[in-house]
Image 1 (cartoon, rainbow, N blue to C red):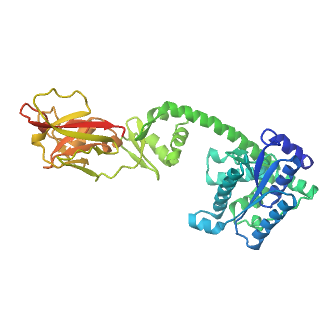
Image 2: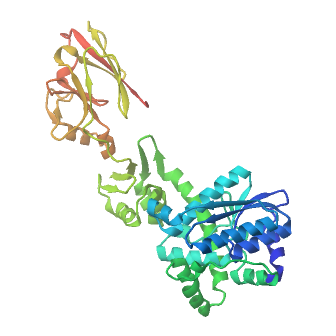
Amino acid sequence: MANNLLQDFINHNASLIQANTKLLVGVSGGVDSMVLVHLFLDMNVDFEIAHVNFQLRGKESDGDAAFVQEFCAMNDIVYHQLDEDAAAYAKNHKISIQEAARQIRYEWFEKTRAEINAQWIVVAHQKNDIAETVIFNLTRGAGIAGLHGIKAQNGFILRPLLFAERQAIITYAKENDIAWREDSSNTKTKYARNLIRHKVMPLLAKINPSVVQNIAHNALIMSEIEVLLKEYLEAAQQMYVTKDAYEVRMNLKQISRLASAKTILFYLLKDYGFNETQVKDMLSSGETSKVFLSSQKRAVIHGEFLLVTDFAEDAGRTYQIESWSKEPIITPEFSLSWAIESYHGQRLPDDENIVWLDRDKMIFPLILRKRKAGDRFQPFGMGGKSKKIKDFLSNLKLSVPEKEQIWLLESGDGQICWVVGYRIDERYKIQASTNEMIAFSLSFGV
């Protein structure tokens, strides 16, 4: 394979890398990236080189940078270098050094790619990297997304060496007198990936010498399965999920009947931070109003539905309405306007978003607030009988998030005049004896 590496490289990448394609190639100075550069030189492709000095190995890191820079000068290749303290970056961002290096590298690569107008950022991952990544992801429980290993294309990132195994690349470098630098940290098994490379993979190779080839092949299959799963989930989302400004509503009853209900619900919810244990509980609970919390969202069971919402807003927020005020009140749910007018027997409005209340019985300032424990009112049409707001809303079959969006209009004497958007209080209805009224107008979607 080694003697044919150039031709195999061309065959695998002919559709993506052509003579007029401009590339930004990430080069560490190691054997993989140096072979990659020589392959591009042999192809006569237009490319520039980018190297990051993470300052992790002192003089050795400086030596890597000098080696790559000298190679570029000898071959008339444009060279870009970033010096970044990866250890300090990791500490500041509270992440591992490996993750810090990855973030630094790819953020800078993309910035540089855009500046030089390159079509691709090219990096030198090869087939062994796929196998090692799959094993690493298996130990983390990364799910199906972690089993496809490393993708050949991801946005502007291109990995054209994934078809080749590490030994073939090393053999090609030796046969063609390609110089490279050895990274001493690659031999240290304190890093998980190095432990997999130097200890785990050799053991697996004793079971089957084709382990790298086989894992990489399975990773490709998993990548294709992931595409099929994505298409299926998009169809499931169309069938079982609806969204509006306040919530995502999933038909839990219908989803629970599916053969792979837990998997499907997990993927429908994974962007909201819920874990597999919570998903399992959602499917088995059936308890209306049961609440599940993630770091990002809240999910509430309501009948046959699962409602995903933001966390409840502060119930202590209030708005004050003075008799002389003309400015509308804007809440997260609606806009409320009002006007004090004379009443002389006009026909009551049939628009549910317009409410008239008896001004003569109301004491200013009025208070618009969220409900609280013990709130009561006399619902219009019930002959003056008192009812808890909690019971009134339960009879309406409202969900927990819907109940949290309820606002109450309270007179200055503490009496509730109106459950906004639902029912006025019997005591404040317009009567023949009414002289002045307050005309309230609700508008939504503000």
